[in-house]
Length: 492
Image 1: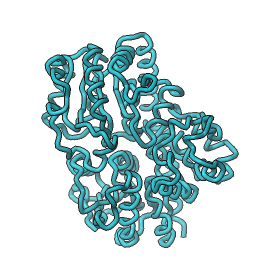
Image 2 (image 1 turned 60 degrees about the vertical axis):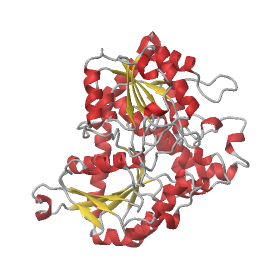
Image 3 (image 1 turned 90 degrees about the vertical axis):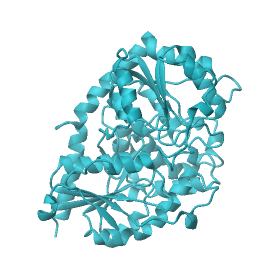
C-alpha cells in the first residue's frame, strides 16, 4: 500500500483528525472525479475529517488524464491518496470482455487487498464506495465499518437501479422487446430504446454484474447522489415517499451535488483554446466533447465535421480518432491515445473552418472551457459528470449519448428538465446526417428556442450555487452525514 500524503508541513500528522473516512472508486474517470471531489469537499468542509482516497491500479494503467487529475496539484490538508496494490490484468481480463465486466473483475480482484489496506489505515469510521465496488460490504462487515454507496449517475438512474431486481424477477424475455415504456415507481417511465447498455442483453456477463451490484444497494448505510434538490425533485421525492422504495427499505439518500472538477492544470493546447475564446462574443461558441471514453464511427465523424461546417457556428471540438467497433474505446486510456486528426478528418475541413473553429486532440480542460463566457452550447455524450459541469456553468446541451446510461440521461435532460436538444436519425439511417446536425446546432445557438433553454439553464446554475453554499440543501445534506459519522464513531 502506497500512501501519498498532503504536504502542508505535515501539520495534520501532529494533530490527528478525530474522524477518518475512506473513499473508494472503480478505475473509470467518470467515477473517480465525483468521488475525489467528494473527498476534497469533506476535508475542506469539516476540519475534523481525514479522508483516504483509495485508488485501484493495474499493471497496465495508461491513463494520463487520471494521473494528471489526481497528482498534478498539492492535496488539501487531511487528504491522502492511497494506491491499492495493482491488479495483474492478464490474470482476470479477457479480450472479449465488455466495459462493465472488465471494470467489475478488476475491482473484484483489487478488493482482495482491501481488508489489509483498511486495517493499515487504522479502520476508518466509514467507507464510501461507488456502485460497482459492492464487494466491500462483506469485507467491511467483518471490520464493523459502515459502508455508504455513492451513485455517480443521476437520481433517476438510482431509482431504476433500486427497482431493477424487481424488474428482473417480474419481466420475462428481454427488456428491449417490451412494447411499452418501463414504469418506475413515482418516476417517469423509461423507453426500452433508452435503457442502458448493461441491461439490454440478459444473457451477457454485464447484465449479471449489474444485477449483482444493484441488488446490494439496500445494504448501504446511506446513498450519496451527485445532484441537488432543485435539479431532480421528482426522483428524490419518489425515493423518500413512494411505498415501493420505503418497503425495500431504501437507505437514507443524501444529495450532495453538484460535485464537479474545479481548476486543473492547463496544457499549451488549453491555453490556446482559452486565448481563442477570449476573442469570441459571449455565448457564441459550441463546445463538442464526448467524455473520457467516447468516440464516433468513421461515417459519423465525417457527418459531424460537415454538419459543423454547414452550421457556420463557432466551435471547439475535442476530437479522437474514430472507432467503428466500440464507442467507449478510450475508456481505459484517457488522454493516452495516439491521435492525428489530419489522418481522418475530411479533406478541406480544417481549411474551411479556420478562424471559425478549433480542433483539439483527445483531451481538453472541459471545466475551464464551459466556465468561459464565450461558450454558449455543449454537444455532449450526456455522462453525468459532464451534465453537472455544463449546468453548473450555465451552458445548454445538445445531447449525443453513446453508451452506458447516457440515453437515459439524454431523455431526462431533453424531456423532463428541458435543458437540452437532441438531433435525430432519419428513417433507416445508422448515423445522424450533417443537415440534422447543422439544424440542431443553429437551433441552440441562434434561435429563440435556444435562448429559452439557455435561460432555464442559467437559473439552474444559480440554484446549484445556492445548494452547495453554507445553508444550502446539499451543504445541509452533507452536514447531516458528517454529524452521523461523528455520532456513530463516538458511541462506546
